[in-house]
Amino acid sequence: MEQTFGLILVRHAQAGDAVEFARTGQPDDLRPLTEQGVERMHRAAQGLARLLKGPTTLLSSPYTRARQTANILAEYLPTTGPLEIHQSLVPETHPGSLDDALQRKRAGRTLTLVGHEPHLSCLVGWLVAGRPVSLVRMKKGGACYLHFDGPPQAGRAILHWLLTQRHLRLI
Image (cartoon, rainbow, N blue to C red; front, side, top):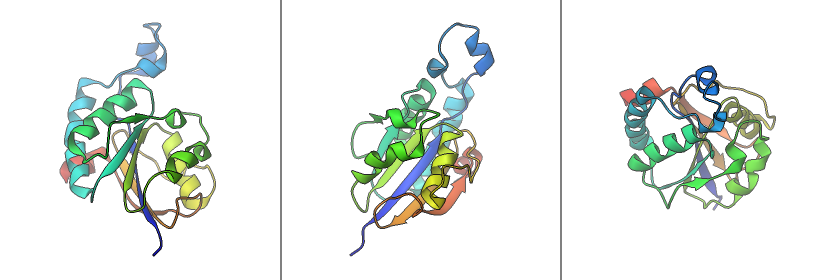
């Protein structure tokens, strides 16, 4: 029987203004979610949980806003273990750098990655078309689901759905 694999990509929720945060002198990777971003993501996570079939492994970018989003998701999704922080989910990394993480996940399980734009939309391009180009636009707090009939490889994914945070909150 051929191995199937599900992958959910989630963009971090609404974070503070980058220019305003830069004035604090802190690096951008420490920029947190806004109160509104936290509240909206809680409701979106509930919707995502209704769509998810079975357990998921949760990986996040190390950036504060992505980790906060992933921690909210962990409250609602049936996870297989603790949140894993993955350096390959930071912006500007090549989508192919996630190959090891994708290969070690079990068949029949879902992997949920929390990251940033344009990295996530380029990852969709890499996995669907085999090229690291943006094929979709992932809005803050939005998610998409990719399916593989066989091992996860570049150019082998099928995009099943792409939902905004608003759509997820309405589910």
